[in-house]
Length: 102
Image (cartoon, rainbow, N blue to C red):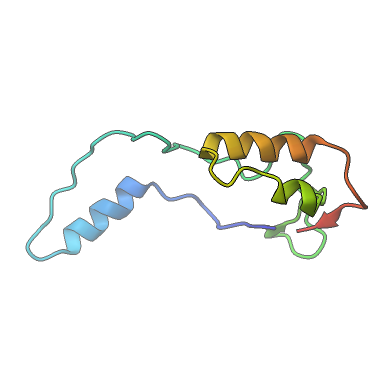
């Protein structure tokens, strides 16, 4: 499930408002993006369908269940990128039963 959070707010505006309210005033310094940071986030995958059957502000996306044995077989010492890749391949395989809404 993904909640509709309303109109997006620029983080720079939030920082500037908070800095202006601080006593003594605080300067906002822009350092640039760091590794792993994103400007925008995809909340629904390219092959996922955004459905809102219960409430207009709550998206529900059907996801296939994962086989617990396959998940347990993942390498606990793998890097984050390796785990993400392995999980992605598990999600692309045939579902073990009917999809459920999460």
